[in-house]
Length: 127
Length: 340
Image 1 (cartoon, protein in one colour):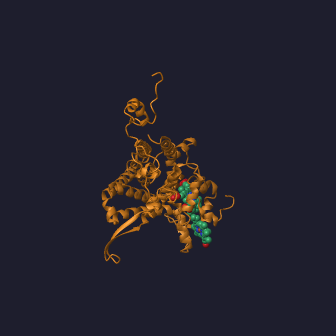
Image 2 (image 1 turned 180 degrees about the vertical axis):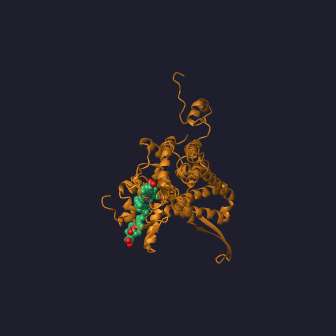
Image 3 (image 1 turned 120 degrees about the vertical axis):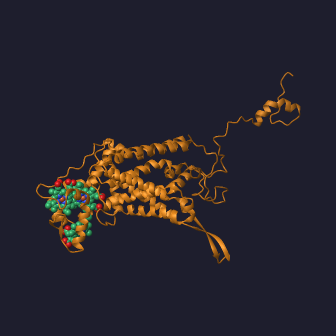
């Protein structure tokens, strides 16, 4: 092998960089999905079913925003025909009144930082 | 061109159908592990193979004046004559693709006013350079953003790049520019091969294949984020399972995710055996990594057989007496032995 030191340094750097997630995985505890606190009243249901909400709540909020502000219609009818007031603060966060243990906990592990709260106000006691 | 598209479409279809039929763990566990092992082993094998290959001649590219007499201006960036200069040139090559910047386009003008007839004109063509840069940087950022799935806690710099990437705050989930630009850049690189007859003529299966593959990867990723959707939280748990070597069940994740993973795995496994290894190869290119000092230092061919040289002083030592007898001039005169 020619230029041994440089080549070996390059190989080591390549291997370390490419396998870094695995090393970090070894050194930390085994990953668990965030344990979110949904809400106390078990009788109530979310706006749509849970699987839909998990995957598409961001899209839903986007649609809500457009519907409320562009079309001026502030009532959302869900798949089952139930009506909801379109409001980020007064609908979502009324049921999910523990922002830190619900939205935030889940977002943190997925590295999501919604910028909504630079304008919208989080309910008292949840910040 | 169509053959390579077919292969990529086939991989995608098999993975999608397989995952729909409940074979998620095959495409989501076995395939990625094998692909990563092949990728790491393959690239190292490549590097060792190249490092073992002798360089018989000094063939640095000389994009300008080599260092010569003091009053002749040296092209320092293109013709470095020191190790440090070579390092600088390499860094610029890797980060800015300087040799692509020199890309020229030649065209035959049938009726040129200057010549009054056909004339060959060359002009600088920067599109390839622009889109190559765009492609590579976007690809890197897209890849880097994925570290939010590979690590817990997520490194802070990932969030920083996500913030920049989603700066325009379009929609929710926020539109990331690099994703869209990556797709456009690959499209340009593909169209370039199709639209330019000379480039098309020299393009083979192995030129189109990575382009289709990357297009499939970017497309399925964009699709998953903005259109078909999947439970991201479950995906993160799934990927962390892979990273920490205790894979979890694939239930509850959209088949598109496994298609995405299968395409990425194919790309990884294909990487070391294709033109894509230029990632490692650029550092091993004699045209890039040798200093332009061929007039000053002798480059020895490492496979030259060992030679037994006889230098002149040794020759003279051997034949001094005979030479003295014959009256030939000597560097070191024959010493008269005492007592004779």
